[in-house]
Length: 173
Image 1 (cartoon, rainbow, N blue to C red):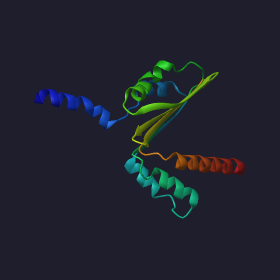
Image 2: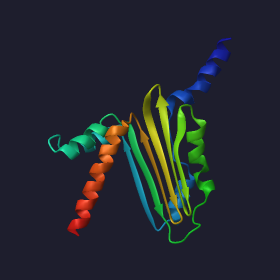
Image 3: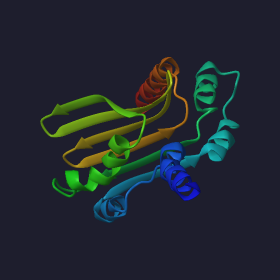
Image 4: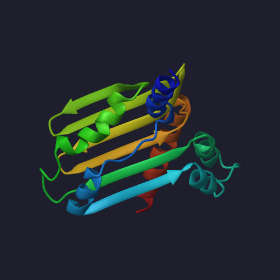
């Protein structure tokens, strides 16, 4: 009986841990890509980066507040010289982590000619505790994984801040 309980407890560990890994196929994609972006910020690095943001500037204060409770922020982005450098099979291991793990649900699925965007969220009770985004175009692929509590109101404010910042930067050029 003790052995059965121990085995059952061990089998439930993956459901509790929710450790997320980018598949090995992403390393192969990076080798094919003409441009790659690889961002891996664990909770400690996010807190460290937050120290450089001012709590007095409203936009920076919002970003600092949004990221203060996150456990991690991970981005993989690839730009390819030509179409067909990646396939849906390259994304299958990533998607299977989202669709096979407890608490994850696909909340957005938009498919257009040559583009496919998916957003997944992980709920615990009534809180969103993680989010993943897959944005696939013919020659570009971006995957974002956010680990930790996400307040969608704060996130929408952050998107507005980012857009305003990008717009201001573009006007200066």
